Image 1: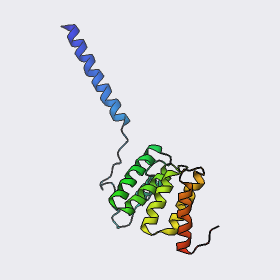
Image 2 (image 1 turned 90 degrees about the horizontal axis):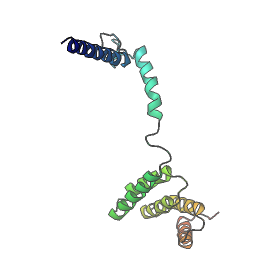
Image 3 (image 1 turned 135 degrees about the vertical axis):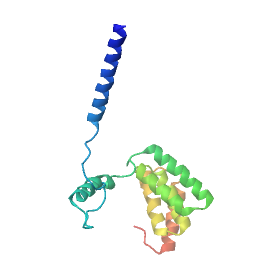
Image 4 (image 1 turned 180 degrees about the vertical axis):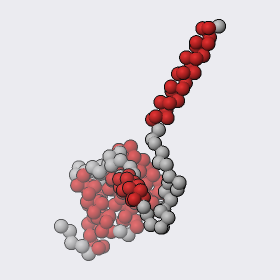
Length: 162
C-alpha cells in the first residue's frame, strides 16, 4: 500500500513538473486591456504597432517559393503544356515563366514560353525566349526550326537581327 502511494505521489509530482516546464517554454503574454492588433485609442498606430509592422516586413519580403526547385520546374512545364492544349495561353505563359525561375539554366521552358508568346502575339518576347533557349542549348536538335521561327518573327516585327 505504501508503495502505491509513493508511486502515485511521484507520478503527480512528475506531471506537475512537466506542466510547469511547458508553461515556461510559452512566450510571455503582454498584459494589456486592449486586444492585440487593435489601434491606439487616438486611431493612430501606437509604438507597438510600428514594431509589429517592422517585424512582419521581413517575412513579407521573403520569396514565396524557393529559387532553385527542379521538381517544381518540371511540374510547371507539365501544367503549362496542359494549359496550352486547353487553349489558356495566359495561364501557360505564367507556368512557363515560373519554370524558368525555378530552374534558371534549364532551356526547355524557354522554348515552350516562346511558343506560347508567339501564339499570343507577343512576338518580341517570343524572340527573346527562343533566343534564350538557343543560348542555353546551342546543340538543340530543333535548332534550325527555332532559328527559322526567330527569323520569321524578326521579319514580322520589322526588327533588325543583331
